[in-house]
Length: 283
Image (cartoon, rainbow, N blue to C red):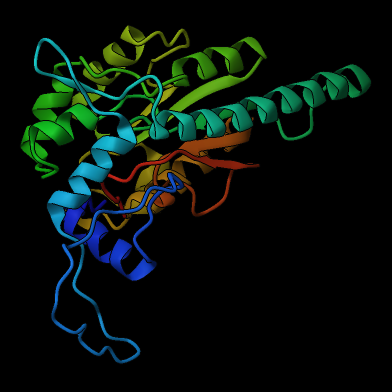
């Protein structure tokens, strides 16, 4: 897994080439002040000057409705462009889960069993269940493994708005719930503690919470990815191999929910739902 440390700069280039709008908010990006100098000529394929990083940080703060709390931490506003976008995805996923649950009930009544196994939902954790906006603000959007691991160990992140409720709703509809993160095995305990703290009421044992153990991976991952220095999987392949393993245990993954494009390649899910995240990219 590669989590890009120069995330804002990369986003600047993307926005500059894409016309300056980001993440469905419809907000214009602040640009440079007017100049009396003529605009330089650009040939097709030229890379234009990226937007200023300070402008991008301001735009991201506005998107999240960034709120500084009394203890110095940061949270996203309950009503912001970000939470509205999250709500749209959450509502679409909720509708799909309800329909999948209904079909499962109908097929069970008609046939006595569901072809493909028990219905289940798999979700990423970082910025799918637990918000990292506070960490990004505290580090000025500069990721480092140690600082992020220390942050995760506090088990004090707030939820992504509406997502614990979605998980509990799916569980109530008869879905088995699995969490799948590319974070390392050594943060299993704080992940489970934090998920429970934000209101997740589903099992968080090793059979339901999957983390990446490159040193001593389970047999299915050792076959797919290797181990130790011979580990070959990026985040996408690791997650696909794990979804395949979950299916092999008799589950039908009716939905896969994440915040990164790399959460979904490789199949093994009936439908995918991507939450917004303009802060970083994981490959």
